[in-house]
Image (cartoon, rainbow, N blue to C red):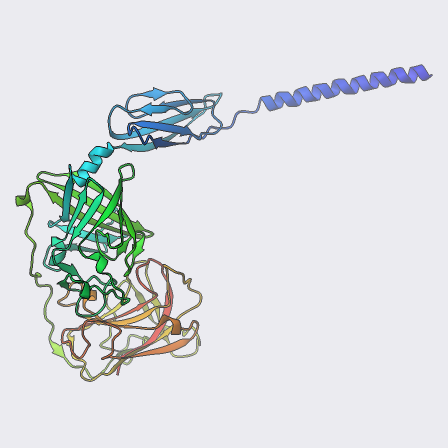
Length: 495
């Protein structure tokens, strides 16, 4: 009996083993029969620092067993990580095809620009040096949201508006030095400068006049010698040294500032023309793109003259002395609006909405910013206002906490301003401005802000010393950024 049980036990265990082996073989067969994953093609490249024609490709493809490279110059390779030497500088499109064991494939391509660093540097700095000046044909500078829409927000051309800047000379030398010559004049750029006598004017380029909007000395922006570096692979120029600038004095790497940085970086592209070279320099940050056109003439006779006197813009409006000007924003009826009728602007104002603090109270206006860099709510008058009957300007503002306020973005800043727009194309260069101390601005409650007309925060003159003012503006949320926001206003009035 004992032997019989032992025999059957061995047979049972053997049967289990056979079944297990069959099951394992079956699982292994099923696993081996799974199709391979589809490949993903990807690579990066690096140009040699000693040979600008030699490029090393690093393969980051996945699920691939073989590779086919097309280097864009008629040459190919099947190596995983090839090193390729091009025959000449130029623009090439490199295509990588990655395949798996069943010939499923994926492709990835990237453009490569190869420049002889010596020839690229010569194009910028000449054989020994090269001087660039703002281009005097068409627009020479401007700002927009993207490179494709460059200069769509604002642009400048040679029409006598800022004649002094066309005489500025920017010289790049082959030895790495950068020389700026202001030729005795400087432009009072907004943000950089504040008030009279320099804001919005060409003024004498002397240290005594170089005090910025924060009261600091910025005389380092005047004529001087600095250094620069140039990377021909990225087409980036870095100006080194406090006061080194090109474009506008307020444009720095990644933004705008009244202060002077130790360096600035921008991209360049240079095109060779007949008798001159044309260089575009560009600064870009989120939602903002500035670019500038500079020319270097091998034939000076081709350079157009600078227009010294501004071509007249618009017309002189008749003078008028109103006795009342207000907008309650409760409605658009004459009882709620007198003279201060909103005109086309980047801000959307909706009168007659519920008071955010009390829905049962008198209706108010909803002030909706846009994503433009400098949105203002504007009120264009039909005359040059004489302010003899007024001593103050005031407005009630409600700042919601639901907006997102951050450094470099939306702020709680509140500004009122009065300007001439009928005869001044760049009205912001000569406006009279009133600024609220942002530290006094509460959230989620109404507050009235009142200013004495004859005590502006900044600008040119005062309302009673000017006879050309015809545009009133309100700016809430700060400027120089593209962040939207919602605010509420009521009772804008002159008293």
